[in-house]
Amino acid sequence: WSYQRVDAKPGIGSFAISVQDVQPFGDGVRVKLNLGNPSTAVVSGVALKLKYGPREPASSDPDFGQHYSTWLSSLQSKEENLTAELQPGAWNPVTVTLPKIDAKNFGYLEVSISNRSISLARR
Image (cartoon, rainbow, N blue to C red):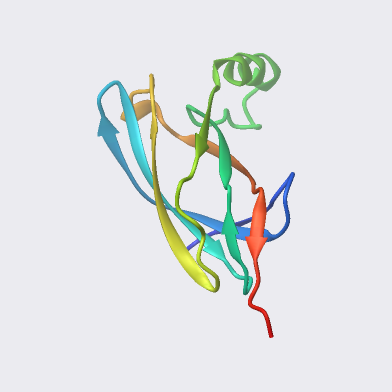
C-alpha cells in the first residue's frame, strides 16, 4: 500500500492514510480509505476534512498559472465525522461519499484529520 502521513490538527497523533478504492456512486464517488493508527491509543471523535476535484494541472504546462487558478477554484470540500473509534496499531477502514463529481474527473483528494480524545491503557 502507498500511504501519506497526516498529523491531527487539532488533536494529537500522526496517522497514515491510503486510498483503497474509488467507485461511482450517485452524482459522485464513493472512496474507501484506510486510516492507520500507529499509536497504542484508541482515538475517538475523529473528523475528516476532504478537499477533492479533478487532477491538478501539470506544472510544465505553459499556461500553468491560469490553469492552476481555475483548478483551485473548482475544488470542492466536505467534512465527515466518524462514529467509529480508530483502533490502535491497525488500519481502520472508512468509506466516504464525495458528491457532485464524475468518477472520470476525480483525480485529487486532500485529507486533514482532527480528533477530540484518545484513550490509553492504565498500568
